[in-house]
Structure formats: structure tokens, C-alpha cells
Image (cartoon, rainbow, N blue to C red; front, side, top):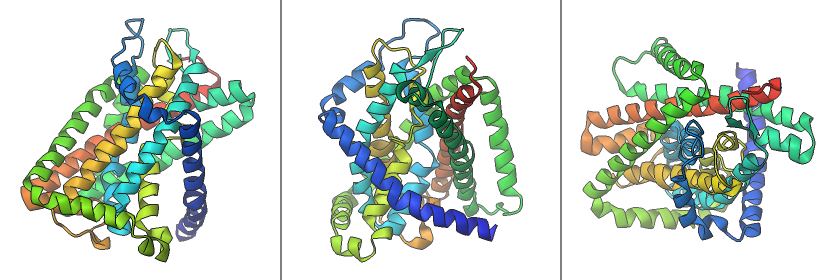
Length: 382
């Protein structure tokens, strides 16, 4: 395991930073310029098309496709990852997350519009598709489409789902009943059983569950952040000052760029909103809309919901509390310690429940993507 860990660290040290960061930011900037800042110009229209009803009674609506993609984007990383970025990079990481979300909106628009243009329709009338389909039909290469599908399955079914599950069980360490040799297995088994029930019901059951859970968990989490901000309102001006001062502390950034607020914020933003990674288009293709661009606009909103709303909620409730971010508190403990200043032990419970919901919906959203890729690899029609 030690050798395997070293290999992964070595690969991650090159692919994640700097290669992936450079590629995704470059694409986001390119699409932003080519579309003349569509994520800003058409922001109002994006909210309007969310409410558009599909033609058929059983068709997937824009809102339902939005909830599936948001379920995957909004995960445990929105709590644990944001806390990590702040504790390891500094409060300025929050600003760089915002900037990445703004740039990523254009990437999300392009990839989801392509998914609509090249989507297929199954025998049951349900639409399906994703990057593998538009790679094959748009670029004429099934080989590259297969490579992408395999890479996505490995990343989301294994890597991201394992990370979401780990982050969830890690929040239990603050409780006295936690034992490293037993508790993670119990939590994992329960999570697997509940997720299995939804997954075995097929894509429609996944869509049904995410459409109910995602709005609920998002609203509750944001309300908690607002409560923390109101109670600590005297700390808010200094909180924003700290975010912007640290974001533009270039002496600190260039003194250790790899672990700086800028890089930590960029990494967190890219990982969290997934814009340009080719995941959300698998859900976007399932929506029944009157024009492909409309679903592209809807998926822009998913990026903003993930980073500008949920990630900001985590950052604000933590930084407004007055708790100093340190490496020792990195992850869920930082948010739990922040909430405990107002809610005591109940703050720990709230974060655990939030992580449970975020982890569960992440598993469903991720496996919905994998189902689409497996369909592509097997050349089966849903």
C-alpha cells in the first residue's frame, strides 16, 4: 500500500497540479471569450429556462437534469474540501474558488449543449448521451469515446465515491463511540445498502431521489450559514477583508505557490464544480428541452449553485465564527469547531447529517454518470 500511495501521489503531483489546472482554466477562458461571457450575459435566461416543462409526461425536465448534476457536484467536498482549502491555503482560497466558478460556467455551458446536440433516444423514449457519444459522433472516434467512458467510470465509481464515503465517516471521529476498526465499515455498509436500493431502481429512481434531496439539503445548509452570519455579524466585515487581503497576498503566493491560497482555491473550485470534466453532460443529455442551448444554460446554474452558494456557505459559517483555521483543524473538524461556538454539540451533529446527505446524493449522481458510460460501452439502448 505504501508503494501504491507513493505512485498515486507522484501521478497526482503532475496531473492534478499543474496539468489539469492549466487545461481546465485555459478551456474555460477560451469558451468564455468565444461565447462573449455567456455565463454573465444569459444568467437571467438560465434561471427562466429551469422552469420549462418537457413535452412528454414521463420526460426528464430541465430541473430534474439540473438536480442530478448538482447532486454529483454538491458533495462532501463542499464541506471538507472547502475547509481544507482554507486551513491549508488560507482564507484567500475562497476568492479563487469564486473566480474559477465564474470561468467554469462557460465550460459547463459548452459541454452540456454538446450533450443535447448529440444525444440519443431509447426505445422507451428516454434521452441519453454524454461526452462519449459526442466524441464518437462529433469527432468520429469511438476509441477515444471508449477511453473517456472507462476513465470516467474509474474516477467516479471508484475514486470520487471512495472520497465521498471517507469524508462522511471522518466526521464521526468527534464522537465517543467511533472506533477506527469498526465504525467505517458499519457506515459504509449502511451507505451502500441505501444507495443500492436507489441504483437498482434505475435512472428514473435516481432522478426522483435527487430531485427531492438536493433542494432540501441545499436550503437547510444555506439557512444554517445565514444563522451563523447573523449571530456573528460583527465578524463579517473583517471576514471579507481577510478573504480579499489573503487572495492578493502575492508575496505569500509566490513564496510557496503549490500550497498557496490561489492554488488551493483553484484546485477546490475545479474539483467541486466539475466544469469541463465531462461528468454533468451525462445528466444534461437526459433532459427534454426545446433547444440544446437551454440545457447548457441550466447547467451553468449548477456550477454557480455548487461553488458560489454551497461552498461559500461553508466558508462563511466557518470564517464568521472567529475560529482560526489551522492545519490541525483541516477538513470537517474546522467546520464542526466553528458551528460548536454557537450550537455546541449539535453543531457536530448537523455537519454529520449534512455530510450524510451530501455523500448519498454524490454517490447517486456519480453512479448515474457511470450507468450512462456503461450503456455506451455495451452499445445498449436504455
